[in-house]
Length: 60
Image (cartoon, rainbow, N blue to C red; front, side, top):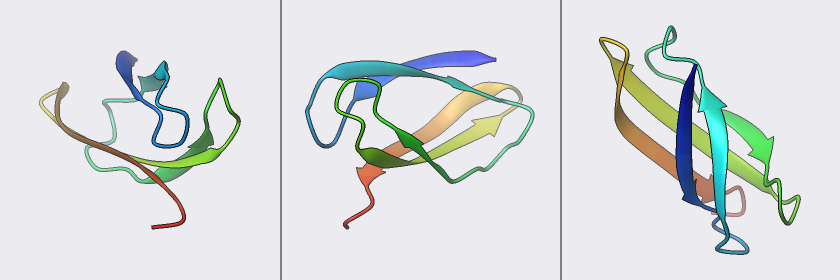
């Protein structure tokens, strides 16, 4: 598992999520641990290294 820190697109607090590098491209929704709003998370891995990450509110 890979721990990644980023800002919530709603409350702007820094949060962390555990990401699974065994799946190279993913998109899923997870709630912010601070404000509980749903965030669409899209990590991308190459050779178990995080090469891309997007976190956006699902309203966009």
